[in-house]
Image (tube, rainbow, N blue to C red; front, side, top):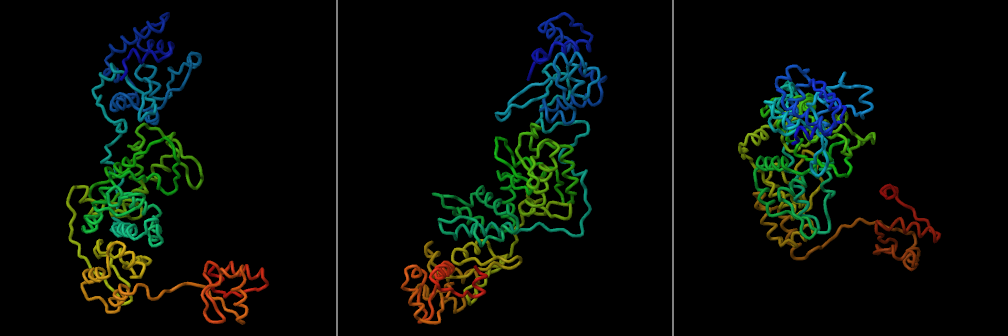
Length: 559
């Protein structure tokens, strides 16, 4: 910290004389060195505890706040509560004499010699502090070194008791904490396994994830990386060995693993909060701070808490949870709707408030941690087990898969996640419908992909018999055996058919060098195949040659 004499040197001589007058010390005619020496001896000899009996209550609270902060508090944080010091040079000080009518507790302490201002560095950035010199700090009985974000004032309360200000009645309707994050993460691992090496997420088969919320897939991918379920080798994304262990666990165990990973994750909720645009810059953000604040603030019981009241209580008592320096000016965040920069503490509701609401009602809900009602929230039973260090109950009953005769595999939601993952290795996923089981289809492409992974048709059959607990339909079994013997025996293609009234027209189009590339396989004398990608180009070219092609209405609208 800083000694008293060094702190006094930062004052103008006129301020030193004002402080001297307050303590009945005449510094008239002294130079700065002499004034500092005399004043330092005078202030050091004071009984600060006794002098505080005669100070205004707000100034006493400000001194306690400084002591609780270890003797110093960032200016931005201190000024919000106790005011600032009006900047004045010697001339203006003589004219206005601000010590006669201080505008804030900070100014009152400043002109008594009980408050000083200085700079220090935090994370390589200069931070301006108000502080108490060592000699004064040592006189305060409450001088305990604490984090500056935990300043205790006369009306502050511990974070853990904030919920006393935010009770909520038991709602009639609420959304119970879901467990589908497990299904979605299984889908991501499955899709990563299924995709060709040159492709990357997202895939059209995962569109339903983006429909739930644009950030949900991003969060699950990050957690999968941080849980070592995914790895990237030589630029190729693949499930890691640990994924198979996770997939075999009970759903409750898997969800708790996600909660634990999220509590320590580097995933930035702030950058995904709806309505906010976070620009790149040198400012740093710790995503764990907001989560910790919420986890500590909510009661670790099944009590309901009013969301708005909880966020208001955090704003009142621990507003700087993610800005320990109290700096609300250096982060570059815009409001997406208005494109206005959200700067200053006056933007707390639009930044911190939105972020806390997003974490409570979206992120924690996705992970099965909270039940959510209209402006109310509470921890789920599984989250309470995690918070209290209790092992989750793994009493899951798993349902077998269904293998249909048309080659479609039906995977119920309560089937084993490992079984669903393995199914994705041998079959193509079909679109996911809310509330419906997952469906996959066996196809030549999926079987070829399985063979590339060393999974031959006989192993496919053995796997399907194992996970369905019943004989495979004869048609499906025969289809797999025929593919193993003959490969692809038939193919469905989506093409456009060109029909002509006279065979000579088709013959002319085949001979013309401008139209020849577009004419495919003949379907008799009066028809030929045209690739879907080429039909509009063929129509344009034939028009230039004096032949107008009629187009079916359905085909025209499909384009």
